Length: 186
Image (cartoon, rainbow, N blue to C red; front, side, top):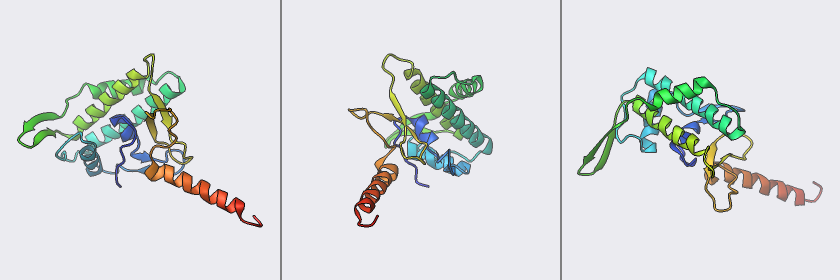
C-alpha cells in the first residue's frame, strides 16, 4: 500500500491507514513493518524502527482512539474517557531521538516513539477544535471513503480527501452518469 498524506495533520493521516471503515475496511498497517514504512513516509523517523508487536498494537489502539475522539469533536459529543486516557498516556511517552548530522536531521527511535508523535499531533489538533476559529474538519464526500481531513481551501468547500483517489473517481462517475443520460433511449 502506498501511503497518502492529504489530511493536514499527522494523526489524521494515520487515521487514513484504515480505509473504507463503514463498508469494506482495508487495513494499511497489517504488521509492524507497515507501520515502520508509514513512519518513514510521514517523516516521523528517518530510519526504520525495530519491529515490535506490542508497540505496533499500541499504535493501532491509539489510532482508533484518535478516530473516536475526532468523530466526537466533529459531532459535538463528549469523548469517551478511555480514549482520552489512551491518547494522553501515549503523548507522555518518549519522543524520537533527534540528531543533527552533516546531511541534516536524523530522527530515530522505536515504534512507540511514533505513537507518541501521533498522540501529540492529535492533542494539538483536538485542542485547536476548541478555539474560537476551529479548523474546518470534513470527511471525504465519496460515499465509500471515511478519510477525515482539514479543509484549508480558501472557500472552505473542499469535498474530497484528495483528487488522486476520491475526487477523480467521483468526477468520472458523474461524467459517465451525465453521458448516459444524454444517450438516446436511456
